[in-house]
Length: 288
Image 1: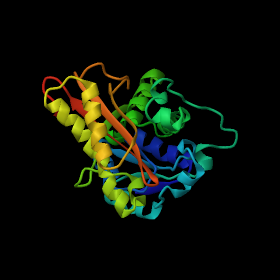
Image 2: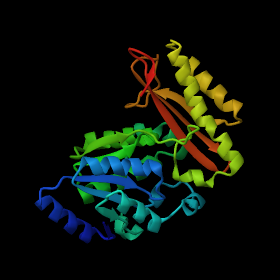
Image 3: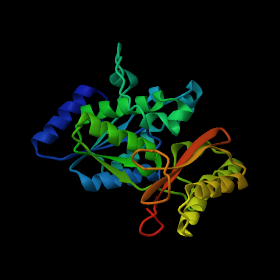
């Protein structure tokens, strides 16, 4: 595995790979690897000839300086994990390589970026995500890129950006990896104190409660939402949002039919967590 830090050396390496007829894949990350990242890298390793993993903590997508400062950074151990999983290139640029002096461009997916997480964190959050991902797509030129289902809104926003801008990359989504008690793996989980870690189970409990309402045959999204919110309240957690929406448009669903995304965000202690489930409501109420 090669660790590359500059745009010229990345482009030179990938030009040689393309000349050799190798397909190129990308897993964009902000580091602090856990089993969820490993699942992305394993899937990527099996899906292309030349696998690039980017490691860049994007300062533009953080709402507060203290959140950016607290974000875990562990490049040395991340590099070990990537190497063991067969990654070909770890692209670990500094901020100046991604945002050189005078950088002034922003990619904004208007409506999709303004709801749910966008409503809570500001539409600039997803503009920052799209801008850096668009830049990575331009730098790497991947045939395929892998993202995690845990960040379902991010997937929807990036998929729309790719369609709207005709970026020639295929987006693949890898299922959420969870702890035994259902908590979705996240780099932020390490900041949970023991009592908060216990309360954090509320997010998955809320999603499951909504899924149980659907499995019981209800077509009423309000009933499924109420059950989910009640499950969170039972754990002493108040969500920033708990919503049942279309997985692609993120619009609220009028009834429980077809694919429905149940999305939740909540602050547990000092940590803000997100999670989701995709429900397949036709022909049977089963989980995706």
